[in-house]
Length: 173
Image 1 (cartoon, rainbow, N blue to C red):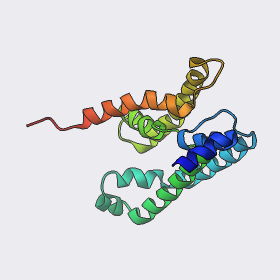
Image 2 (cartoon, one colour):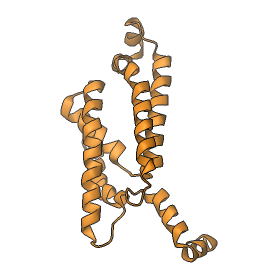
Image 3 (cartoon, helix red, strand yellow):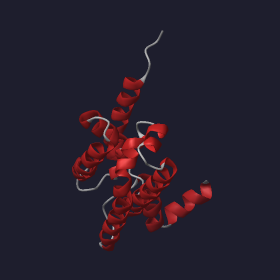
Image 4 (cartoon, rainbow, N blue to C red):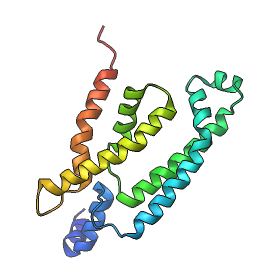
């Protein structure tokens, strides 16, 4: 641990890179990150779109999905591939910005119901809106410096996550 701290104190660039991979940030990212991020997002969505209907059927149960002509195993595999592409692209572009991927889909399902297609559509709008909002806050809170966006999303997301968990608890008997 002391060796790691010594390296961090010696080289500011290394400290910034480590902080990026621990907390996540939008500031200081190279412009070409946007082009490959868009390409990764499009690729992930192209993999995901054909399995949205089977995923909606799978939410009703594996036997019912099979009865409706879907292949649950293949659906799960393709959904996993799509999620890996989308999450990997987002993490490579901005680091591990916590709580956005946890809170936004849950809130979207609460607002539009259990249909995965409508929840995904709302999540596609609400996720970037939350990131934009927290990025603006992170730039204004400690002016002229910038607070890492991962810190701000944690302040926004942690209370939401606690409220979600508390609302899902079974009543004490």
